[in-house]
Length: 486
Image (cartoon, rainbow, N blue to C red; front, side, top):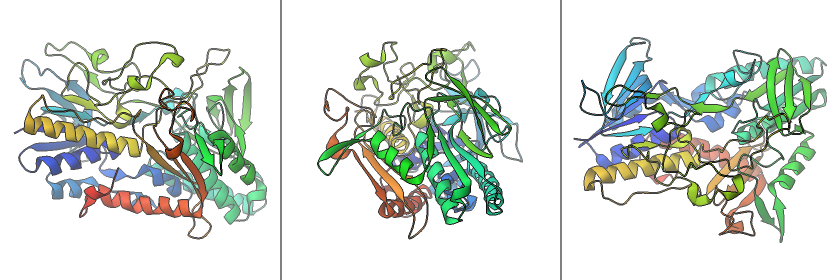
């Protein structure tokens, strides 16, 4: 009997576990280790953050799902990987620390034949002084963060209803953040809510981003063909900002969030301060705090992980100028090059380079979006890793590997710009591939123009609302869940 351990119960890890159990049936053991007892559909946290959904509508308990599917579930935080075993244990194992209230702090060792690292990101609020819910800004990164943000937004709106003008800032809290799309969504959901409540004239709404230009979204921007002409995502996005009266401060690295003031530097080296009454700023990500040790107990963390804490996979990590990187440098199987029974998927793997052009201010400050790899790509990676492992268990190590490179994978993103059955809007964007291939698609900025599109309107809002329910249905592993694509 083979033992597969999945670290993390988010989109990527949960998807991998469900597919593994479906493909391996009851013959083999699948175990999920995650510190959280609930699954969270993170894309809908922005609606929690404006009070349009509750935390119960975007989360559910993992335990009953895993019990029904015959998946072992351990509520714990993984702390160490021992890919060679130890003197006491012949087989590879992971060390975990229980996080459930009854067993909090207990240490356990779990053996594995195959390991999937799907731990997701560590929300690195500490990278910027004063950033985050424990500092002077708000977040929508978790359901509980979003609920607190909604409470604070309501208080600000009530004050505006009494006539007080307010400045609301939404964006990125560090120069190397990712998830610009989430900040874009939240900006326009807040703006929509202000209009709905009749206080838009009392509000200054500012989008603060590390993007060099609007519409970059961490993927270097896109080019769309609309009505016979080509439109860049920068032009497309600028029109939305102009229509809604939202200010944009771009190429910004937040140095500190004080009480009521954001200190930031821009790409030209200038430094400024922005006063605010409400600020939702996303943190940069880094990898989970995992260490690795060989059989003798020597630390081999640098063998498995990059300095940013994300795991090394089958990518080309050779240092070279940005213009010399190739789409072929991106990983395909998500296997660790040293231990091929270890996979890293979703945000847990380390990208070989940025997709957006890296930029540095005259002061030496890096101000450039990190590559996004959430949502649809994360789910696809989780499924592909599960398929590879299941085939290796059933057919042996020489079986064909399943692949899902972001350089040959498309993605669809629907960014909400305000909810409402009749007045809601969303920006629907598709791109293929995610990582541009300028050799294959030289006229479309590295992407296939036939499959890279952008549109905004009520229909896109309804699509996003439908996807909310479809993906929660899929995550709950209800009948025929596997027919819903990642």
